[in-house]
Length: 525
Figure 1 (cartoon, rainbow, N blue to C red):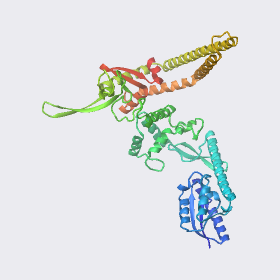
Figure 2: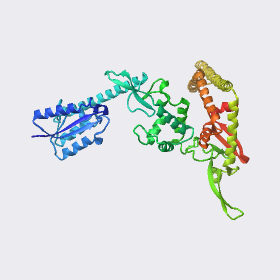
Figure 3: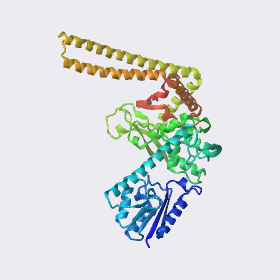
Figure 4: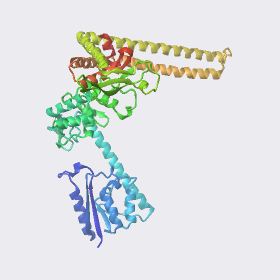
């Protein structure tokens, strides 16, 4: 009597649901088939939630076990419900089946018969079978993606794990199978935690690990009651759903106000912090957002020597002095040091060091005065002035690009007229020279035309810029309200957002270059 090993597989965890699990059906069909053939089932292997299309045979324990058993002659036949239970990878599964047959196993399907390799046609049919199975998986995947994208476009939750900050509710929405499916709504308690995470990340400069430590110390855990992981917090920082937008792949829904937890400008600021802190910028001098806010210094990352342009890095030392009674007093001194001068990298005629308290005090006073002036001006005055300045700049750029385009168009017409003269033997240029000049000028015309189109588009989008300006004003006012009495961490982050560079020269002479986004507001104040 031939010994049989049966393999049963379902692809997704959803198919493991008790009401949908088709493994019992596969098992019954295979057992009945084996009984009809007079075979003895000596082993049964189960794969639940394992994709035969996405998971390689090398990563599937059941396939590895079957191959070892084949070498050990532990059974004679591998029986499956359908051949695609073995796999659906067209570049791999046919050869797995062929290997099993070559190692003495018969491979049978309870519904499709035996897979043989007795002729060239058998080899071809074996490959075609799994090529078709692979194609079906691709089509299924595309249909699933399209279905999820459509669900998102309609403003519904596509399914899957419910993100922290939300909960699943049943509102009577039915799918195509007439089964009720869930949607999400904001979980008020968790939403406050999400806001806190973004607040710590954006305004207080917390890193991911610091956020996890804060949450754990305050007994705040994830949906499973476990400590938050680095990847989960990092994913939260990037999850556009917190702005009220559902996403599936590249498909985004319209903004759904009832799902928004985090304000747009806070979310965008978080993406800026994340990018600026990325490893790719570790050695880049353009980094402005401090990697850590644990340092008491205000300007780490954007303070530069006004003489040589080198970074001002922090240095700490402890000085010991004796009192009259003989006791020793230790004083910690934190100073900004010109890296180029201290390391003798470049000639610099500026100071080597600047006292941290003195320099930070100067910048703090400048910012406090700036915020006080901003609060003293009317909202409309600031926004209108900023808008007018941007509009004027945009118009000037457009007019300049049109003048440049006209110049190249006139030059092209002159050269084309010269061609007629060349034909009549009246031109001082030969044909080859004219062809080269015309080609070069046409390229300049094309480049200038693109620039004009870009400037026209920018001018047309002024209304959106007005909305951006209003958001920037709102952010500035919020900083103005909290800066004076905020923690050093918050002051440090606000300074990093507002200031692009601070150049420091001898005698604590400072030149502040504000971030271009806020520059007009700062000038207006």
